[in-house]
Image 1 (cartoon, rainbow, N blue to C red):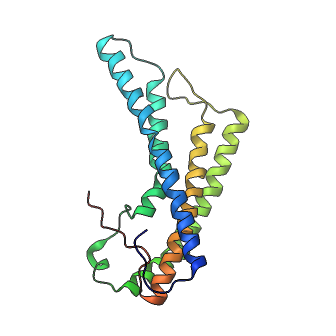
Image 2 (image 1 turned 60 degrees about the vertical axis):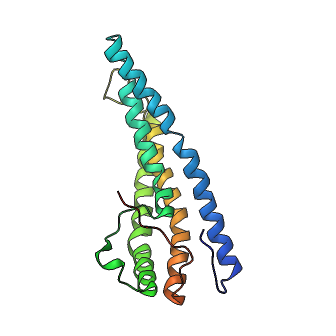
Image 3 (image 1 turned 120 degrees about the vertical axis):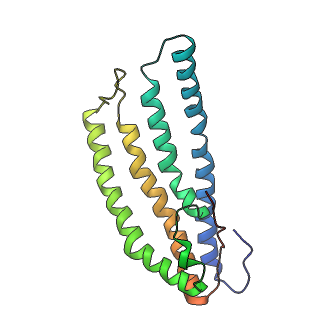
Length: 187
């Protein structure tokens, strides 16, 4: 978190630091999913093109690992400000206006959408777990409930980080002071 000046309530800062620290730690752990993903792809390429012996598991393993990495990394991306934002007008807005826009957006769109997605995806995961659902994509036919669990878990991680971002937005709207300045991420 950037250096904070002024008088902020210690409890507010403690909550933000706790949530942001949690997101930093989980983001680092989740980033390690890229290692088995790269290994699976490299193994498949070697097996397919060097030995003419493609695997039956690589397709499922790679799309599940990549999907998990992408979804579970969303909370970390939110924390770091890496999500897409329309900058055409945003850079010209005052800090207070940015705070109000973000506060309203979190309350009206972010939290209700994620809560709905969590509930729906939890039911999907639970049903897949009950029937021990398997994939029809390949002959390997892995069970799908672990992969389907990623969606509600990603929603939970996003909801937790969203609390921190909402507190920061409310503070910006009320005081005109940024608790954390997010650098523009260029792609």
